[in-house]
Image (cartoon, rainbow, N blue to C red):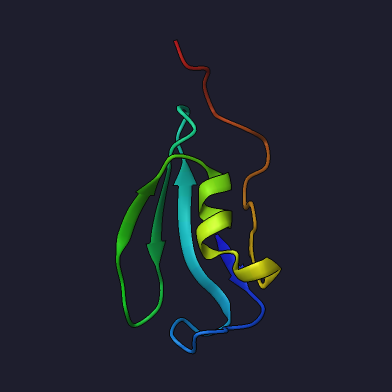
Length: 73
């Protein structure tokens, strides 16, 4: 999930603003929980942090840190 501590733009608010998953390929799917909903696919968590991190005001917070439930063939 994305946890936003400060909303610089005034669009998405603070707190948990999005949730998502990371696939075994490393790609990520993210959906916004705000009034402006969308779903997007990113190449990696690093890309999400670069686009939506806003200088450290928004952080990726892992809910399940045990790793993938299977290994990629």
